[in-house]
Amino acid sequence: MNNFSIIFEDNHLLVVEKPVNMPVQEDESRDLDLLTALKNHIKERDEKPGNVYLALVHRLDRPVGGVMVYAKTSKAASRLSDQVRRHAMTKEYLAVIRGFPEKQQARLEDYLYKDKRKNQVYVTSKDHNEAKKAILDYTVLGHEKGLSLVRVNLHTGRQHQIRVQFANIGCPLYGDQKYGAKVNKPGQQIALWSHQLGLEHPTLKEEKLFTSTPPREKPWQSFNDHF
Image 1 (tube, rainbow, N blue to C red):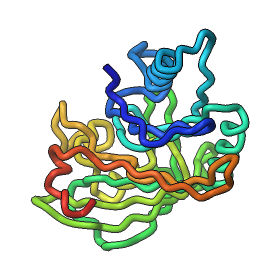
Image 2 (image 1 turned 120 degrees about the vertical axis):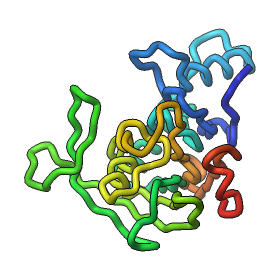
Image 3 (image 1 turned 180 degrees about the horizontal axis):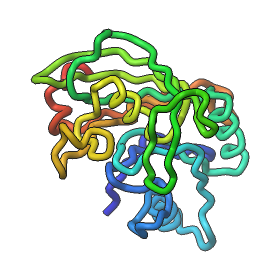
Image 4 (image 1 turned 30 degrees about the vertical axis):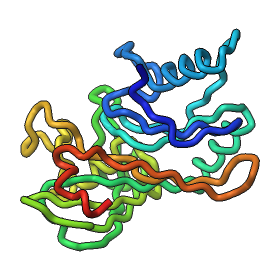
């Protein structure tokens, strides 16, 4: 049984809802990854004798669920990758954060440095020789029992970006053990969801918008009226 759901599919695109805690492609954990699961699904469903072509064009952190797109042809992979490079693919996330940001709506701009040995990202100065600029816009959608629901639009795609930038303003994500260990308990699921993905169809040249809604479970269910 598949634990992913297909949102849209044609000859060039496969848009799916990524399950939480599933890698987007094979990693050192050797756990079943979404790319392999989708290839197996297509091979079985379409009774394909050879290998199935499916390309990863963007990523989501393992704990994050929600909408993402894979390319079913090399032409689609090339054109979608180009959209990612040009920041023409729009990505909107929903997150539940601890506390209340100072502003209801704001842009966060930071310079981030990744310590590869620790797999940890830090806010640093722009003079750091490995610093990369990170930009996001957020809007607070609601408050509930010491938590806030925020809509986040990413302008850069740095690793752990949303998690690090919100922790840096004193509002770590609910359930984030890495950047919010002081306020989150072990075992809590991180509340970050890929909500909307906008792109230009690689062959039809039409603008497409795909949506995925967070699960109706803690802490999301407190904010059901907002999405």
